[in-house]
Length: 328
Image (cartoon, rainbow, N blue to C red; front, side, top):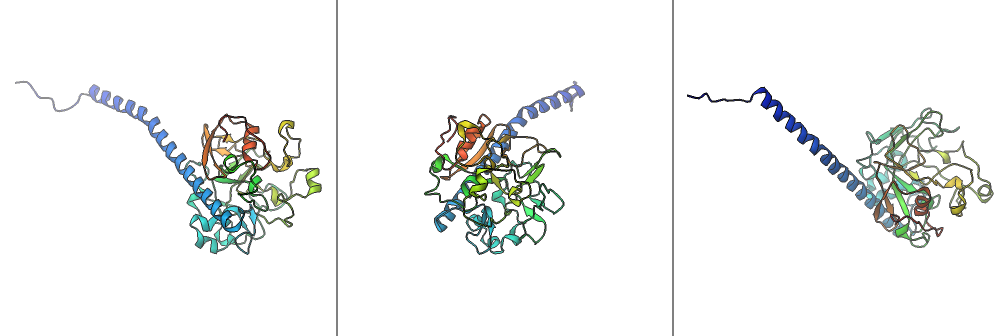
């Protein structure tokens, strides 16, 4: 009689293991793509929720919230704090900005943002201080823990006074970015300034005189200077399109606002977490960044976008028209 073999030989087992390893290797990129697509979809959904909140607030008060100031409450609050009632966070809103500032808000954190960590950031007088003044606003007394955001509001739209979506964005709601993806925490070399920063959704400082959409007054606007000792320069606002640079602007797209208040640099696409600029926006990968437009729609821009067209998409009322086919 022939003997019946009940198991695999060593060679056969190794072949099976090799085949499984090859299959895993083939499947892994597909799984990673599915995960990346799901994360991007969730981020787009977050942006849409923020867009709905902005429009609801605008319809209620006749203008969108400022980056920081009195809006829907007697106390000053940040742009995102003012949106809390429209993000199903009314109970948090009622606590006030100081008590609320440490909260982790899921809608404000993107799953693909590798810098968001546990969702909070410790800001102390001796840590992450990039100017002569403490980066901590005087109103912040209830602890050093702040909630992080993966999204930055467009400073040119919301500024110091906020802006009416119906009348002030003359370039068109469907043509103007109002919120962008952004790393929650940015770090650079120790010799750079600022060398670090974070998007703290509740962060902000009240402008003393609201005589201008921008904090700087006409005489200062005529002769911009680098601000190095003001909380206005702090890299902890959840804002985009901000820079602190008195240098001349490119002549072909000067616009009407000073270089000091406008970041003319396109986003960084998937930069290393330890080499990302706090005043620039970041895509969570090397290929595309999602942005929210004024009409509530969300679009993706690839890394081919240049400095000029990024700025044109961000400026709300300067009549500039992007010449990139991917621009909205």
